Length: 270
Image (cartoon, rainbow, N blue to C red; front, top):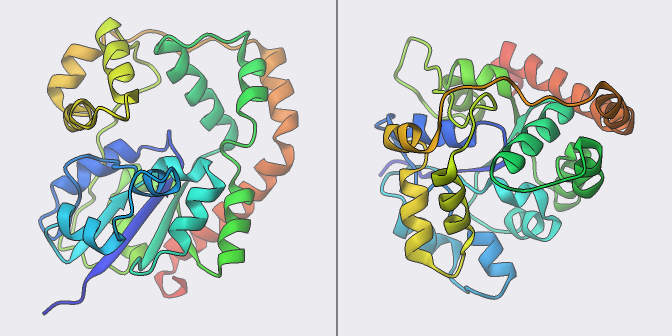
């Protein structure tokens, strides 16, 4: 019997995790859940489930190589600690994208889905720390676990980066670029807002499952997104203020990005 390998993608959100999930569906040797994110650790923390992680894996993953997606746990210290203390996970994968870009993407995504803020700087003050790589790295260090960090641009260019970094074999000899879903250049329609609210109804498991299953499909893309529009306009003064606030976090991000790129260039370092 082949050795089972479990990889947990911890996010953060807004780093092409939906595209990655969709891309892995086309890889025969890998198993992903039919719903991208099942909120396993969030449900445990909230006391809504006492299911062992092994039983959860057996229910949702059919093959020996299992890639689970829980990108929202990146934003919760308690859920991260729960995940890091859970036996049976062989690799934790985090995705590196510039912090300012992450906040800009989240701001655009939320505003297109009906949320209102008093500008980008006000949004950042409210969400400050949401995409803090140093915070997540510190929690992992305290838990004595390692995170495999993958650069966002390298991953979307070639899915094989994930396989190399996690030690999972991949038969493809040519690059496997990911589809670009949920682009920041797209405007979510009224249908998209309705589906967003439906997914937020965590207690309605059937509604959430149906919504997540169609997410990222060509049907969803055709129905939910209208024609492309210009990127969200953010005043230069607000961008400068947020960039100044993120200076320390940007420096930390660049340090782990450099190490991740060295590891990709020299796989023996992984």
